[in-house]
Structures are given as C-alpha cells and as structure tokens.
Amino acid sequence: MPTFGIALPVRNRKAFTLAILQQLTDQITQQVVASNLRHHDIQIVVVDDDSSDGTPEQIEAQFPAVHLLRGDGNLWWTGAIAQSMTYLCEVLKTDYIVWLNDDIVLSDDFIYQVLQHCKAPLKKVITGGIITDQQHPDWIVFGGVLASRLINDLAQFDQPVLNVDTLNGNIAILPARIVSDIGLPDTARFRHYGGDFEYICRAKANGYEAQLSSCLRATTDYRLADVIRYMPLWIQWATSDRLSSKWQVLKSLTSRRSPHNVEHMVNSIHRAESAVPRWKYAAFYGRKLVKIIGSELMPWPVRQARIRAYFQRQNIPADIAQSVLDKP
Image (cartoon, helix red, strand yellow):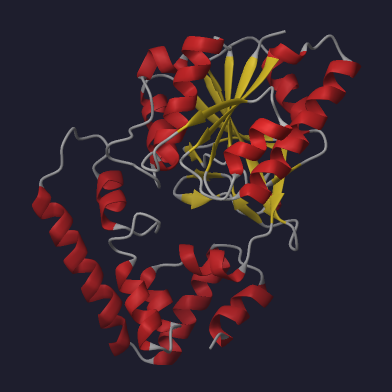
C-alpha cells in the first residue's frame, strides 16, 4: 500500500478545522480495521498560519497524531500548502499528497476513495474532487475547468472521471514526485488565490495529466456571500445599493482576500512569464475601474439580462440568483 499525506492549511476557523480532523480520524480508523492499512500509512499535516482562536492548542489536545506546523500569519493558502508539501516529502516521505481545505464535509467513503486511487500504479496524474452545495446537491461549487468552462453541474459527468485543464485546490491528490519534477507552488506571485490553478497548469506543461473524479466528494454550505464574492466586480457593483458596499467592491481590486485582486489576476494572465512589468498591473487596474464604474451607463434591463446569463453559465440555483438581485 502506498503511503499518502494530507496537507491541511488552516487559520482561525477552529470549528471547521476540528470537524474535518475528526472526520479524517474516524475514516482512517475505519479503513485500518477494514483493510491491511496501518495508521502510519496515512499522515495528516496541518499548517496553522498563526491562528488566534485557539486552533493549534485544540489540535494538540484532541489530535496528538497530527503533525502540526506553525506559520507567522503571512503564509496564506499557497505558503501553507507549500510548507506542508515540503514536510510530507522531506520528513514523512509519502508517496502521495492530498490537498484539502477545512471548510468542507467529506463524503462517508472519502478515505476509501483516496485509497482506491492510491492503489493504482503511480503515474503523472493529478486527481481532483468535487464539492457540492449542501442545499443544492447537483450544484458543484468547486471542481475544475475544461475548455474555459467550469465543471459546475453533476450532469456534466458522462463518466466518473473527466480530463480537465485545471483544478481547484480544495481537494486534490498529487503524486509526491511532482515536487522533485516541478518544484513547489509559487508562493511569491500567488500568495492566496491562483496558487492551485498555476501549479496544475505548470504540471500539465511538464507532462502531467489533470482529471476530475465524481467519486471523490465533499459538500459545503455555500452561502449567498460566497456567490457574491466570486461574481464579476461589475455585477457586485450593479447589485450594491449602498455607497459603502460599492466602496468594498473597489477595494476588492487590491485585497489579497479577494479572488479579484489585480495582482493575482495579472499574474494568472502572465503565468508563463518570469516577471511582469509594474505598468501592466496599473493598466489592468485602470481598465477594471472603467468597466466597473462604466457599467452604470448600461440600462438596467440590459444589465439584469447579462447578470441572469452569468447566473445560468455558473449553474447558480434560481433561489440564490434571485436573492442576489433582491438583496438590500
């Protein structure tokens, strides 16, 4: 049985973190009983990026078998993932690395499905999983991208596994040899968002395949705020009635916590280049501002039709879409 390590970046989400660690511990124990699996065949590495809510202390108290690494608050997602991958390869020497986010609820057979994947001959293949909304079980909120289109509906799976262009990092299984082949995720250019997409694209450029499995599943409570956070900024602007809300939309262009921050978006566009001139960031920022504020010139019926078309492309359920349009 090949060994694998779970890489779990966390920060100030104690309830989520402890819940997923309990799920993992229970499922690992079940597999130890049901098969020839040994506890040390599956290692869990948590990288806590300077939580202030007691997360690391609770992990040490409740899950002593977990390998707990600590950051200084500046790792963000990509830095935490890179640190855990280094530890898994250099210290634990696992055959596979499993990326996980902590704000998900794993399917009851999650570890079993991971084991089934890891029993296959070690190949240059990265396998991602799907995360569906708890209230809308056919709606995939995180998965992968194929031909510039999100895989966001279970109906898109005409077979259990789809070859894709790139994957979300919420769930992904990678052969550990990938680190020696292409290095670690880019912590300098993709501090938080985009580190997963860039790494998968770089791996594919170096002979790896990326696939999305409908058998590797989890769910999440995908709320209205989550939908809004990922909407194009001009739609966020159009559906914001308060000046304070519109100001927050503009701040998203420079916030590292936003998937729309200019640094991330420009680096994604130029991911194949070793360096990007500063003027390109400024020019991109200016174009975004013009698009956001200039959307006010568009008649509301036209804007509304385009917003509904976006909802349809994203497979956003009708009740959530209407909530966005109706929100105060």
